[in-house]
Image 1 (tube, rainbow, N blue to C red):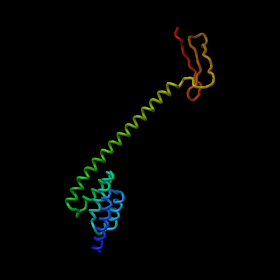
Image 2: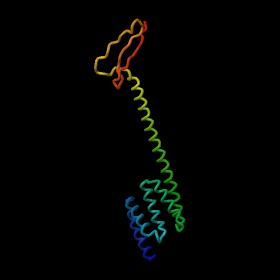
Image 3: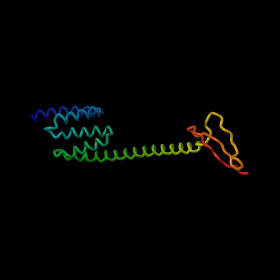
Image 4: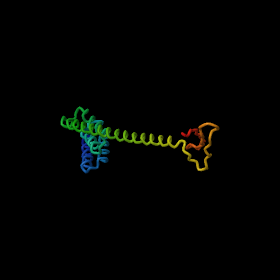
Length: 171
């Protein structure tokens, strides 16, 4: 049973590697996963795990690549050279993942800042227009308030609510 499993494993692994070499990393990833699923019960599958990690690496799926390289490193029967190469590529994937996270944070920070500035500008404009007469109908005339130095004017705010303005005119 184990010999048949080994033969099947290497056959599937070679097919996945061939697809990988053609640059079809998505399909190769699926084949490596299938190989692991089919043969992982009896075999360590370190080559297939490494191939899967390399697919994620080439597809720039940095977090997945890090996890997959960690899986390769954790296999006891994994050759030292494969572990060493996995560690090196894992560090590179971590750096790429962190750089992407910083770029994404910077983009969102800039976006939120622009939205906040636009909101502030809108609010300032709304406040500036609050008591301007924006209604299409004729406005009541200004009038003097009794025997005082004050005058009044009726205006409408942006919600068309009547606002009474009382003001004085310098002499």
